[in-house]
Image (tube, rainbow, N blue to C red; front, top):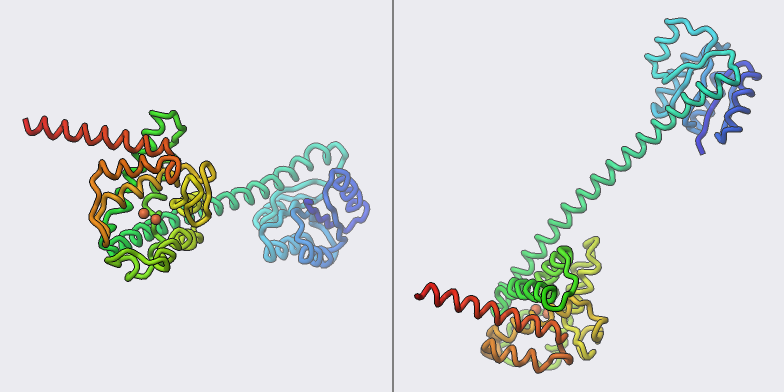
Length: 351
Ligand SMILES: [Fe+2]
Ligand SMILES: [Fe+2]
């Protein structure tokens, strides 16, 4: 509630003002001299003070000076029956925001005084809002910068990771490219609603999907033979590790969920949560196909790369068990079309 302090040595005037402002819904305190007024200011920090100039003991100007020294945010309106020019300019110089004249009529209080109070309190409120929105803006900017820095750091980490695993060089970049092709194909072929935001999210997720492999020991990651069951378990921890690494980043909960789910299978036999069909986010289903295709067509420590046609057959064989069938169809379709287009272009150049 907005608090007003009324300082006047004439109790009738202080009480009349108190009654008036209380009726208007303000919390009102009164003081009959300067010392009590300063005590109340110290204790309650009112939003607004009505301050009589002529008072025995500490006069209004002295009280004003004290209030301003203590807290410059408190608004002070001077009350005077003797508003000489010098006193008025001195009070303004000391920081008073306005004047009201005694004696008051009800009409004067209702129209002019209330207007003056509203202007001052509105100003207070506005400053407060401006300060807060400035702060929010600064925080948002900082957050954005931090997020960008964090994302860049994660990308470097992903690149470092792929450098460490000699067989997956460029893996996340290729997965990123395949994901984009699939998303655009799903949009044009199946009418799936793919927004720019969806594509941006998918890009981040594809690039960072295996970041958790940073926690997998080198000897497992680069093992030249097939992995034993313990080592497979070790590898299967990477979606959880990705989620753990990215967790401190604000505002990417959904991205983390997608990354965490990129090894789930439509039939519920994937990991880490054994989620099935629609419970797996669409972007995770897209990454799963892009990821598997790139893994199959890259040399692995324990086998040579498959050719593209064999990899397509594998994807098609696992439609509806491991993979989302629409995603497989979209990928095979768009990849074949792009290959044909590339070959046609190469032939044209050859001619
Ligand atoms: Fe993975
Ligand atoms: Fe991967």
